[in-house]
Image 1 (tube, rainbow, N blue to C red):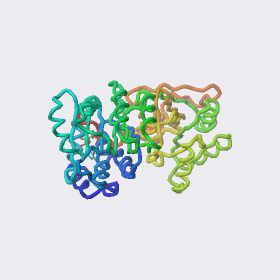
Image 2 (image 1 turned 135 degrees about the vertical axis):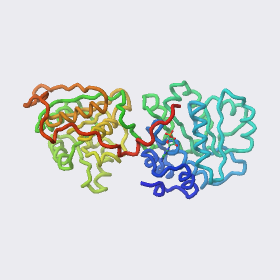
Image 3 (image 1 turned 180 degrees about the vertical axis):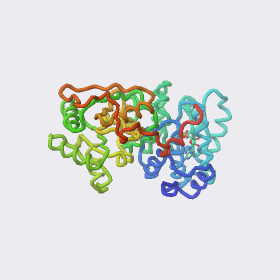
Image 4 (image 1 turned 60 degrees about the horizontal axis):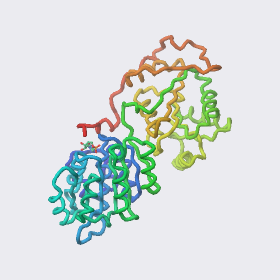
Length: 410
Ligand code: AMP
């Protein structure tokens, strides 16, 4: 994937080139197209994922294509929790708008307001601000927010942690009702979801899972069971637990089909998503899954990678991936929605060596359990001896994410 395919203008591509970026980060790939389509976006992304360019680039494009107003009232407002972040966002805005006729500035507290007031008089298209100072300046009639077309809440979770909820509400009341809203947050607590519900209209969900980190909220469980009894066990969990919205990973396409059939036969609505399915079938399955008419989506790793689905209460590894990093990707689909995320792995005797590789990557031991009536026939503890079961060598990084890791703390 290159930046050229995202629908960005030549002026922005030039600025990107000047920055030295060659490929978009996953969050940029996912967030830029819907933002350009003027959709509201709810993005789960941490610092270091390239999220700032993810909202800044399309925002600048929209503003540069829109109608210029003579007095240059604020048309895009980016709220951030801290001065440091505000300053960094402004740096990004300035760098990406180098070849555009757009003005930008930053306002934050702790410094004399007068130079900010004077600068605002000249007009500004993009304003980056911390909530408190923005309200002060508005109270002093130093600016108007009546022409804001795009609102960005960056690091919304930190804004709530820092007690900005009331200020945010006040700011929302100063904005036109018709506008585009983008909310970026690393975590999704109940409060963030409430905030998002109050602000966003039919948002497109995008997420960039952090790599090689297990979110604290994910409860990981391993169940030892024979391969041939796995479908029975997973069907038992889903039916008895009343689970809804379960994403199940299988290693092969055929495995996904077989398991889906068994679930359907057991009265659980399920659909498979993998490389052999047509785009139409995938879209239909995904739509049903999001709406809740399909309880279980059975997917292979590749098919799941590009899936745009919100965080889920249950992710199941029907088979463990033989690449440890894939385990982290898979379970990263749960947990961040709240405390209830559960990642279940069904582990057969043949897969023990994979567990060891995963534990090594995570840097923690995973406890396993046995469900009564599903005792494995082979001894679980016996080390696997066939060459196929040798602990998997950690592969060289292949994903893009790694390149966008946090470089400095904010
Ligand atoms: P952010 O998550 O927005 O704080 O970005 C993290 C770092 O990644 C910043 O130093 C950006 O300049 C850099 N960055 C953002 N997008 C890209 C990209 N597509 N390629 C390389 N570096 C990038």
